[in-house]
Length: 401
Image 1: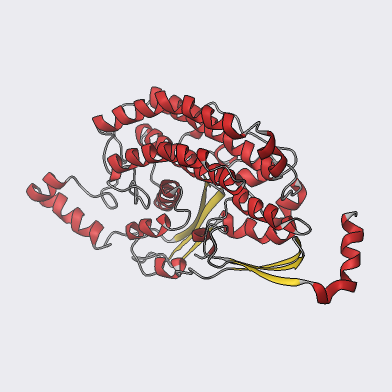
Image 2: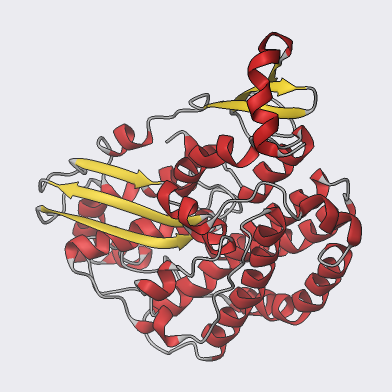
């Protein structure tokens, strides 16, 4: 039966349709959100998404916190790639105060952000495998994610919600152990990743399950405001790192992968190639890591070294000013965006010169593209709807800011 004639016949069987709650707490939703589905057997006729189950009032909280205390809030957006959120926020404040970072600090940020992107995409793509019945790749590649988290822990002492870096640069330089761990990761990861690729990418069962599931055309994706891998999988070549370079991304040579069908398989393959390109960027940044300072000369925003705080009055004064948020902030409004794990992560900041932002809005990519989910799964089987959700990488932390 053709899809159009199928939907034309639904009016006559309205009373025979079933309502199914997919979520808000369900292992297949990968987060706390709900879809109320109207089902004709296994086929989805209509979907109504519901969010707000973990709303934490981030934007209102940010209006009552000093600028340096907002960083931990950003951890809780896309918690699969927290450092990108942290550094996107730091760059927004730096844009407001007119702070230019040394090259070394910018390259260090790029290394951390691309490691975060790899970790984020690994979670997404291995979960697609799980939802098609293939658990091996998930358990195998989580070892690689743990190696990345070891690197984060060495830099900042934390793994998942990192609070990494500071306004003005990095908190500290890369340690000898970080260099050792990074070299080991760069040497071993490519072969292990290609082994995972061999498990799924050309696997006939996996391809049959993913090709044609949850497609969206490029024009519809643009109309919904898609960005990131989901937009590129639909055939639209847009990446913030290229269109509006930040943190010296213009220095690096990398390719933006683009799909054609905008379906689950394209989203999987695009993220696979983005992992390879992130690795390529890290290698370039690490091989050409500049000498110099790892933070800018902004004593009003950057904590002085602890030994200086104990021995020098000027350092003690600046330490007090930063901690107590007694530093002057320019009046103005700025918008800055970075290429997050799921697309354009933006921060719209309005300052009235006070200790806290007058207004701060987070542009969360998941919140925007999740609106298209009912359209993408209409007419599909329930099992395909689960796959579609996994391949979109809907993160509940970005839905409910």
